[in-house]
Image (cartoon, rainbow, N blue to C red; front, side):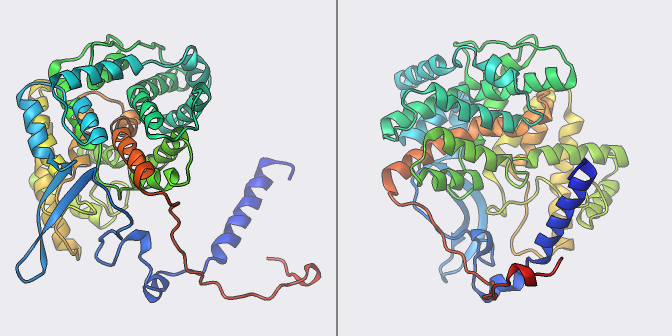
Length: 455
């Protein structure tokens, strides 16, 4: 290979060989009774473990033994997320640190315990000397999730006890990572802005007196300023994204990798790599871009045009031609997503403060119309409603958060759940997770080199 064109052509030919020799078709999964994606034909997840951390309820049992869809419920350590959110919101306190405590220790903290815990997290919210310069600024990435993953792996080298997987040491590592994830996300973004987009570079230190949500806005914005409502809504989003059962892709990844006995940094790097995937962590970005495209192509004040646009999306004639109305529907919830219901109320409050009532009204119109259109156009086995990504995308846009940080902020929140699940796996599993695959390739006779034909 003497030039890039020849290399590209050769790689394409190898890819063609790979595609040609892949003979697995969808019917084989049915024939072999394989639960593709660890889901049965009704979309229900295959049970692979036990957990006490969170529970999702989307169906209720009927007297005749059947189940019917119901309003979604989410429980953190047995506590209904509605009750938890209502309490800290009505009492005007930030809830994310409290949620972390609940997820990790399976109990709600009293005032002193919460104060001590917040102080601990604040003291951990610092990076090793020269880490920002040597690991983030010197190797800026166009993708902030990749930057975070690299930084997490690099932190292994700064830990004198990195491979100790005792609960006490893993808890210490988890708390440190929970505390510094906002720094890794925002500093990674600042490096990207400076080195790839030629913007001014500013690295703001966190304030130990601020909450996680407040610090995230403080270190992100050039002037470091934010309103209480802005921090309150971001804090709520962090609470609602912190945990969602052991079966979501990144949390299951945490279980799988932890079961091998590896270190915390490797486990969370794997979880970050999972969350980066657009099928998992990038849905709210798609929601925002879908609305941007809608505004460019139709009059969003006309309800009939909105209906036609949504129908064209389903027919793969509009937006990204995927056939998906982003932010609508969920693998588990059908009647409603409790996280969306809670976040929607604060989103309305934020839209009023920002003078964006029309924006909120547009989202509500789509949330009303989309389920009807989907039900009309598609054969679905369960109902469809707006999910948390539908409203988080709107909230992040109202907060002037860059799209590049949408998924990293998800990671800032979900690392709390990953931490709880890693510790639970260490305490209770004791066996490496190793599922089985069925081989469907028949035995092939070996061909000597001299008899092999060219592709």
